[in-house]
Length: 342
Ligand code: F6P
Image 1 (spheres, rainbow, N blue to C red):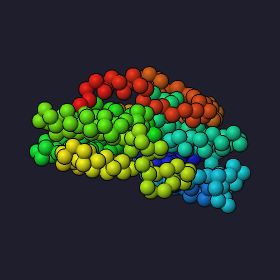
Image 2: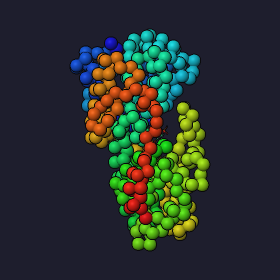
Image 3: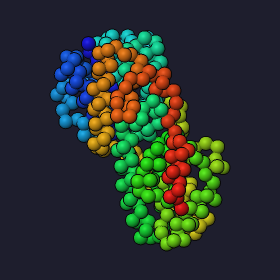
Image 4: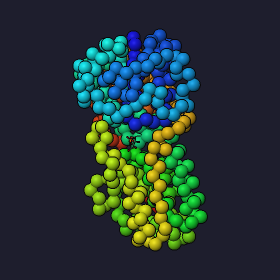
C-alpha cells in the first residue's frame, strides 16, 4: 500500500512527531510505503506531493511546524475539489489511503470524504484542546508552557511599573489555554469564552489586587465575551471555513480597565507564538503514539475513524463522534480556578 500523509489547518507543535511515528512504524513493522501530501487538503485537491521515506523523518520529533506544509483549504471548493475529483487525483498520484492530521475543520472534511467512500484515518491536533472525543490533543501542552512563560515574564515588568497586564491567549471558542496557563502562572483573573463576565466584575478583581499593592495580571482567551457583547471580538474577517478570525479582546479590555481604575494597563496578544517552536516532551510522546496508532488503523482498514487519547490509552473513535462536539471548560473547573481570583 502507498499511504499519503497530510497535515491540515493551523499548524501545531508535534505534527512532525506524528509523521515520524507513522512512517517509522509503517516502514519498519508493516513494510508500507509513504508519500507526503503538501499543504493539507490543497495538496490532495491539486495532487502536490513530496517523498516521505524513513530517511526524511530522521530526528523529526523535536521539530516544530510541519515538514509537509499546511493550509486552511476547504477540499469541497474549487474546480478540482469534492470526493470524485479527489479520488481521481489520489488514483493518479498512486495513493491508496490517507492519514489526515488536523483539527475540527480537517476532521469534518475527512468525515464527509470518508462518507463518500475515500479511505481516511484521522489524527487530532489542536493547541485549543477543543475536541470532545480526545482527553488531550498534542500541541496544547506546548502552547500552555509558552503562554505560562510569557505571563511569568509579563508579571515581572508589570510589578516593576505597578501596571495591570492583560494577556490574550488563543483557544478559539474554548478557554483551556487560558485556564491552564492562567492557573500555572497565578493570574488574578482568567477570562474564558464559556463564562462571560461584566466589566464591573473584572474591575473589582483588578482593584482588589492593586489595593494590596500588587500588579494585576488578567489572562483572557481570544474568544471571551463581556456580558454586553453578542459575539467574540473579531475584526479580521473569516477563514476558509467561514469561521470568524478572533483576536484583539485584550486591546478592548486594557484601556477600559485603565479608564475605570486609573491603573495604567497594557495589553499583550501572544498570538502565533503559542503555535511555534519545539514541542514539549509530553506532546512529542503523545504525537508519536498517535502516529504509530494511525498506521495500525490503516493496516486494519479502520476508515472513518480518528485516534483519541482516553486516559492513558490511544483508542479509535468514529469521525462522527470526533466532530460531534466542542470540549468546553466545564463550570466546575472554572469555579475551582476562580477561588483564587482578585
Ligand atoms: O485553532 C488553532 C488556532 O491557533 C486558534 O487558537 C486561533 O484562533 C486560530 O487557530 C488562528 O488561526 P490562523 O493561524 O489562521 O490565524
